[in-house]
Image (tube, rainbow, N blue to C red; front, top):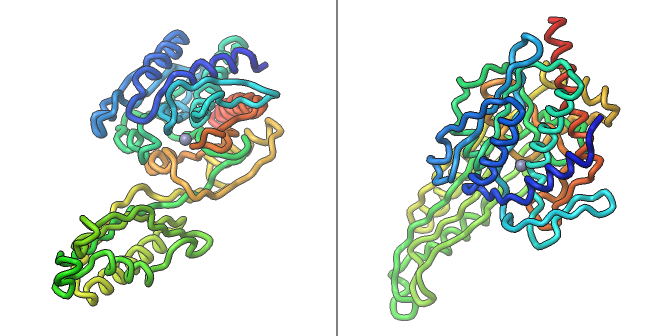
Length: 375
Ligand SMILES: [Zn+2]
């Protein structure tokens, strides 16, 4: 039923339109036309303005062939870099980029599969509920678009984000919450050769503190990292400033809070005892997702996966996605779409997986109609 050539052509056309985070406008224009041609309404919000982006999120809607509450699908329009001048090639059932760029299957494979599903529904007069499709901007910059979206605009009570790595059939039931943490030590500047004893070296203070702090995998639910360090002005000046940007993630909110507090305390104690001053800035980035196989959103997706004959995998992930934000408003599970080696120039997706994405979306729509009519 899937028109493979049509699907591949649309995917390639979309992937070759650059849409690096903050510069999604050209892709927005393209995809707006694609959906309008299929009878959808397309509304754009102001989300991009919050982070100097070139456009906002799109909320794309169409009434159904049956009178049910709308069903939500979400995906993101932006990509990471290098994402300009992408050339798509298909070799032995593998879709990849020809040059030294990403492919952008993350997340355009999802959008192409959605459009193909809609075409199949129309061609075969399949039953379809009202659809709400949320295409976000700035996802790769920290879920910026999803965070700025006004969720009171949604009528859907259940949704699926199509943006996880792994084989189609994999359903993400757990994903972490995350804190971004900036650790700053203030010391005192002095000449490194003439009077170093008058200075307090902030780089040394940070080093001593970090050496006492846990890092890496903390337990099977929790990780911690120091990612960027900067400080000092010149080789011959005792550094009076040093900062480290890091993060903590956990599937468990209490563990997130406890580890964050402990890191903060160790840093402040250590810097103070070394004669400096410490400052720690904690920013909560997104909440955890903790869904159960018995939750309707998972049950529905699992039934759809089984119907397509794909292997069903309920998985936990260490990363956040738009589902992390959406799930705080309506139950929303993130589904794997088969994209591989994302965020690298080796990114690829198998033709078969892209086709399976379409089959899975159609099965979800069918299962949703069935379950809502039974209810
Ligand atoms: Zn993505």
